[in-house]
Structures are given as C-alpha cells and as structure tokens.
Length: 375
Ligand SMILES: *[C@@H]1O[C@H](CO)[C@@H](O)[C@H](O)[C@H]1NC(C)=O
Ligand SMILES: *[C@@H]1O[C@H](CO)[C@@H](O)[C@H](O)[C@H]1NC(C)=O
Image 1 (tube, rainbow, N blue to C red):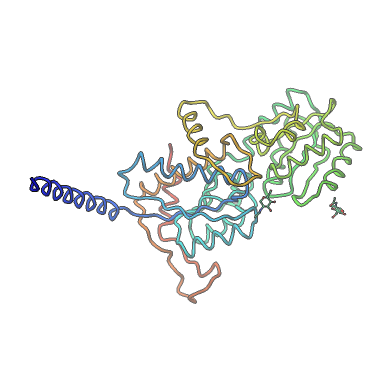
Image 2 (tube, helix red, strand yellow):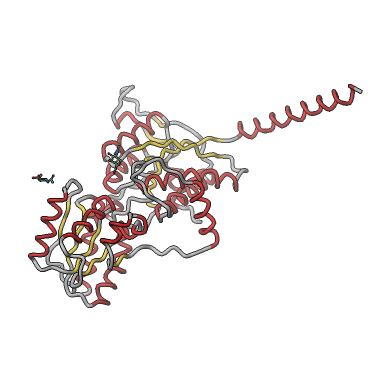
C-alpha cells in the first residue's frame, strides 16, 4: 500500500526539480537592464505616472514573456526641485549604472538633466516636459514622448480668431514651462492680427497678495481677454483670486492651455466653480476599447496615501508614461542591449563630479533604437 504513494511523492519531487531548473534557466538567460525613473511623487501627475509605469512593466512582460531583456526600474522622488532632480539623476547613473532615465517631470528640471544625459550618453526620456524650448537646446540624448506645448498654439489661435478677439493678454508662470511657450504664442497671434499689449509673468513663489496685485493691475489696464499658461500649483490659486477680484464674470474671457485643462476635472469643487466658463484646449485621445479597459484596470489598481492628491481619473501624462515604458522595453530588446557599465575616463578615480561619471557603453545604440521605435 505504501509503495505507490512513495512513487508518487518521488515523481512529484522530480517534477518540482525539473520545473525549478527550467525557471532558473529562463532567469539566467535574461538580461536585466536598469532604468532610472525620476518623478515628483508629491504631485498628482507624478503619482499617476508612477502607477502607470509599474503597470506598464508588468503588462509588457505578460505579453512579451519570451523577450531576452527585462527592464528593472529604479525610482527616485525628486520633488519639484531642480537640484534634487539633477542629483537623483547623478545618483542613478553613478550607483545603478542605468541605461536610460524616464523623467524628469518638469521642463525646468529637464533643462539641467538633459545636459547630464548628453555628457553620459544616457537617453533622458520625458513624457511630461513639454516646453518647446527644450528641443532647441539640441541635446541629442533628450527624447520627448509627449507633444510639445507649441502643438496647442494653432488651436488657441483658432479659438481667438473664431471669437474675433483683437487683443489678448497671456498670464503665465515664470518657469521654463511657462516662458517657453510665449514666443510661439506671440507669433501665432501676430499671424491672426491679434495684439498682445502686455504679458503677465507670475513667479511660482508669489503669494496670494502678490497675485492679487497683478490681477488688479490688469483690471486697471482694462484688459478682459486672457490666456493662462501655468500648472495646477499656481493656476488653481489664480482662478480663485480672479473670482474674488470679480474677473470671472461677464465681460471677461479666459482660455487655458492643457497644463490646466488636462487636470480640470479633478481639481476640487471650489476651484472648478471659480473656473466656470473658462475655455481650455487639450490633446484629443481617440476613444477605444483598449483605452477603456486600461482606465478601469488603473482605477482598481491606483491607491494614494497623500491627502493633497485627489484623483479619480487617469490623465494624458499617465498614458504617455505607460507608452514610454513600452517604447523603451521594445527598444532595449530590439537593440540587443546587454547590461554594462559606464566607460570611465582615465583621469582621477572616485570623483563625484560629472566628469568622473564616464559614458554609458550602450548609450548610442540604445538611443538609436529608441528613436527608431514606432508602435
Ligand atoms: C507635498 O505637498 C504638500 C501639499 O501641496 C506640501 O504641503 C508639502 O510640503 C509637500 N512635500 C514635499 C516634500 O514637497
Ligand atoms: C506676500 O509677499 C509680500 C512681498 O514679499 C509681503 O510683503 C506680504 O506680506 C506677503 N503677504 C502675505 C499674506 O504673506
């Protein structure tokens, strides 16, 4: 009676061993490619992006489990700080020898980070740094997986033209993001003969009193048509104050770029209420079954512990972040990237500065592969 049972156990163990051995083989044959992720995890855009990025990795390898490469993500929280973002990137390059960086979030951060990418020949792939001035810096290793802001200019000009507005005042944040669009706006308005008599540039650190003073100035100048180009941090306060100043009433017109319109549906009731009647442009995402199913999966997946983040809807940046991971995963496999370090210069060892960083051995190959990836 005992015999067959023993046999069964033996067979079972053999099966287990073979199974384990096979799994091990697969793991050993796989090339792990470290990729850095630099985000402001204290922001709505950053939190959504982080969740989309991790879903992208598991979705991608669920479909492509025969791939020989696997992305391993190393995430750093840069907050909204330019210096923090730059040092996160340095840390990722130096200590994790990452082959590419996803991020950073803002255009101001990207301006510095892409310099590092160029030096170390590590592709910096940003899905959210949208300032059109960034591409003009011609850093070869900067790859943008978002539409740059100048793509909105034609739509904005069309709205202005359709309403027959002869004059408009841009109100924009004094950052790389805010300032970068202004030359494109000026050119577009000039083409439709709409005057821009004044531009109101608002630094991020302005308090409510200072913003109010700027709005009062516009009132005194009897300006009534405004184009607002800023992110939610400043924009949400601006509209509450404009309402207090009586500038959200009849006789005034407001247009917002997608920095604000993309998050309009989730800024909270009070701010939303202050923005009644504001026109916004934002990129159109064609509806599809795939998108709907991803959205509902994302909603089930997403959790946040931060009270300041009020989200119930996926945004465009989340989708771009998701696609960015897919693009890099495809590019890494296609180019046959193997994990390798940075080639160090012959000079001094143990330097913490940028000169001692070296260059990513696979950098040029990976960059070419990313740039030729279409899907
Ligand atoms: C995160 O955001 C909240 C609310 O906007 C702010 O009070 C806090 O200081 C931020 N924390 C960091 C580390 O930036
Ligand atoms: C806002 O900033 C100005 C200039 O720095 C300062 O004089 C004023 O007291 C500040 N107001 C508030 C409410 O903090």
